[in-house]
View 1 (tube, rainbow, N blue to C red):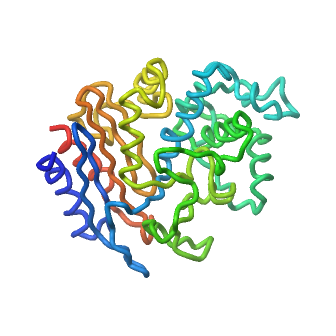
View 2: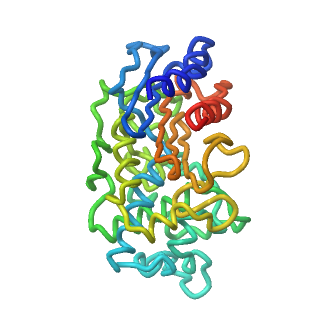
Amino acid sequence: MQTLIDRAFAPVAAAIEAGRIPGAVLAVHGVDRAIRHGGVARIEPRARMRADTVFDLASLTKPIFTATAILRHAEQGRIALDDTLASVIPDLRQYDVAGAAECRLTFRQCLAHQTHLPAVEPLYTYGQTPSTLRAFILQRAWQAGPPVYSDINYMLLGIALERLEGAALGHIDPGFGLSFQPDATACAATEFCHWRGRVMQGEVHDENAFALGGVAGHAGLFGTADAVLDFAAALMQGRVLGPESVAGMRAAVHGHRSLGWEAAHAGWSGGDACSPGAIGHTGFTGTGLWIDWDRRLAWTLLTNRVHPSRHAESGIAALRRAVGEAVCN
């Protein structure tokens, strides 16, 4: 494992040295676990990366928290994956129930991004309260388009999850040492946000999740590399979900999207050396988690590549692939 982690961290160290990313933590879980870290924030307080640095996991919230929670409710018989979201959210498009396409959306379709909903919408610019923005998401007649990877899918799943749990997302324990309310001083800094007028550290980077109260179905989860890999290890060991749910996570529903994840395919973020059936997901802030079931390997690369600005070429796509190739070869 030591040789593997050294080999896999080499392109990460090169990216830090070249100034493409400010810092990173790489951890690999197999028969044992190894971790490497490096880099320093570019803006005060210029904290150095540590093995226990907490990262804004961004869209890793989708598979680790939201999809997992929805699948658990399905296992418990509280919903079926082919039920409509409206079965749990009766006020979804409540003024046009008969004709609204949104009322026919199913949990399975949203989990696998097989809906007509857009990729993203600048909800944070609307200047409303979190509760009003939630109502807007539910009542809007979303413009129809081809299926795309969509934050809106997971915003709706997050609202459905709140109804199922009877609690706000931020009050649900994600487990594994993950958190929606981290200690800001332990967190890697992300972007200087011109809208909020400060560097984001310990506050969710995603503007829409922030406007929705700090947590939404698509973003808001924080964690260390160890916490992310604790989740992955438990998932591989069958301690998170049952075999049917895991099979749904591993099998592409359409294209490369599975229930909450992306299945391995040529050119994907996990590299081409992965076994068939591997799954992974990335986050906009520079995070990622990949699981190769056949090799019994999981790895997470956590970077704050948006620090201090997303408007720079970090080379994160190529870096993720290089790490995956090194881990699996």
